[in-house]
Length: 268
Image (cartoon, rainbow, N blue to C red; front, side, top):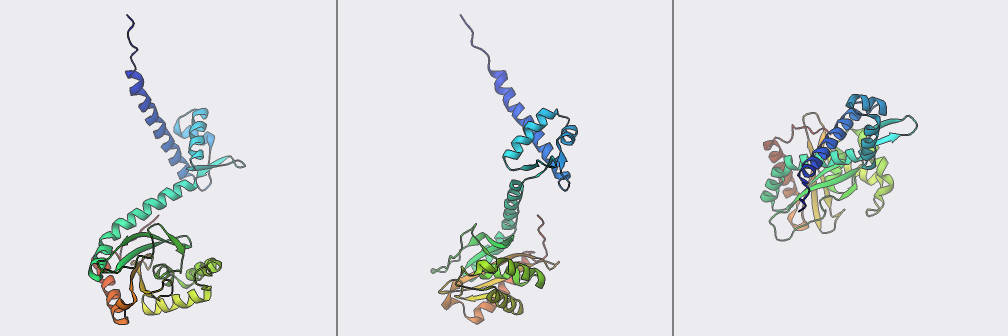
């Protein structure tokens, strides 16, 4: 009678070998990150990790295929890849969402209107959260994850209007060719809207970006005068007269102070 082979050793060792490979790959990533400015050579990485050149090269090839590192074939040096940036950006977005969620819920509850949270991503505004109010007729204009050129939409406009003038101009100039896709707006139109927003303290749209609704965009600025995010409150036109706009602006500012969100700082 033949006994069955015992596979228990294989079942135990395979995940251990896999975990070891992951640990080694992470160690290689960390070494590349520490030398990212000038890049790291294969021999340096191998020596630091205590691995053979062939093992190091094999792991680096996998990391490169996944976009986590890049290899310059001329200098023969490794650098961090774009995929790490995307992963870091996602983590950054969730960190901000977590910090602001309570404030957004309070704003939506007290106003009854829809509230959006936007952050800057290059020359785009990225919507990372939304809380709908209790008013029966709601203005849900932007989906979470959607992008627009900075300056298009009041939340987006609030992200650049309160930047240093030269930085604001750099963004507007960089997006100039894109603005025409949105109701034929020009860079000069966006400059004018940004100037008005800075003078008023918040951005406003009387149906400019979306018909039938009025929105206000309020910047979140920390103690270092950095614009962290933009909050947009949107309602149908008949609910947003000038007096109510000012009340909502003050309410949002008060909630942000109470939640301690005007002094925090987020670093990538």
